[in-house]
Amino acid sequence: MRLPSPFTITGGRIIDPATGTDAIGSIEIRDGAITAVNLDAAPPSGPTIDATGLIVAPGLIDPHVHLREPGQTHKEDIESGSRAAAAGGFTTVCCMPNTTPALDNVAAIVNVERRAQEVGLCRVRVVAAATVARQGQKPVDFAALASAGAVAFSDDGDGIEDDAVCSAVMAGIKNVDSVLFPHCEFKALSHSGAVHLGPVSRQLGLVGYDPHGEEAMIERDLALVAKLGVRYHVAHVSTAKGIALIADAKRRKLPVTTEVCPHHLLLCDTDVLRADGTPDPNFKMSPPLRSATDRAACIEAVRSRVIDCVVTDHAPHTASEKNAPFERAPMGIVGLETSLACAARALLDPPAFDWPDLIERMSTAPARIFRLPGGTLRVGAPADVVLIDPDRAWDVDPQQFHSRSQNTPFGGWRLTGRAVCTLLAGRITHLDAAQRDRLIAKSDF
Ligand SMILES: [Zn+2]
Image (tube, protein in one colour):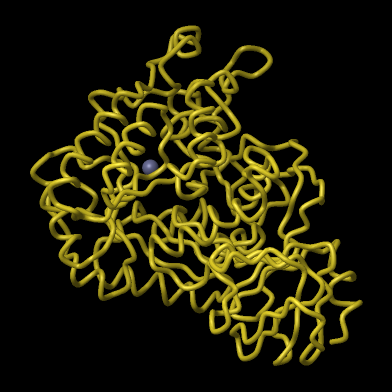
């Protein structure tokens, strides 16, 4: 929905971690950009949206989503994924390259960005493959892909196992001042199991997904980063030891950042079991749900900033794919429409960790790490804004998702906190039906 220009969002709790703002006020939007932030009772410019009782924050940014286009559009495509993102409060997402074929060439990047612009619901930036066809052998043309718009490089889904290839990839990425965004896993060590290695995998008689596979690659990579100095962002860290390695690298001032997914903050391996003791494929992902100790380490690390961002790893699969026997069901769950409320549930503990901290991890930090537009409400920034009702309780009904897939472990959960209105460059890309009257009818458009 296009709005008049200028207009003003009034009465909300303005949270902008980039400027340290957390106060009631108004923001003026003109020609798609933020043109004023007023924390006093300045008269509004143009029509107003009344955000009383709501948080007004920079649009959420998720650097780790799988949009499945090209090649797997029965699971998701750029349009359905953008719709899901907007509904979740996101204004920018970065899509991973494990499509069919992989996003390892300039034309593929240009196609994704063009399609995302046609859809117009969310900024979509590309994380390009780090090696040709994600085969872990031949580095891609980093300079060409970075100039075409790739914001980072990853073979997500697979680790770059060969030491020499990984060194070459890091050197190439360093040359173009981009970011290596690795899925850390030596498959010979992790055994690509179905469930985290532990009592649950033993009880089920399934191959255990050994955390050592993840930790050993983080350790190998950090030694290379210390030598080569490339910016390095560990994807979806999930173990206490992996976090400790990253904390140590940060103490040594290496250019290292990392992220965690809401499911690793809220669930652990015992949650995989249904009441009848069988495992539920909607709790299967890579890395897997770990132990309760690992989960506690993840939460603590977000609070202490060892973990920089909370990301979804939104990974759609159809019901028929997920309904396969657990061992054969594909890895991954959707997350864009539950991420904010799940992260709030896992992390909020005011005043020690309050909404500004959460917005920082879900918008400001990813913008900074991947040099993306947005992540702030500063004057001059694009008007990428989310209005959040922090008190709104709602039931997760996967049938209501905008995503093409419903593979979530959170179906039936009652969560609190929801994006009720998302604006991309000053246009409404999502408006919660229950809030429409409150926001628009009461507004003087
Ligand atoms: Zn991954």
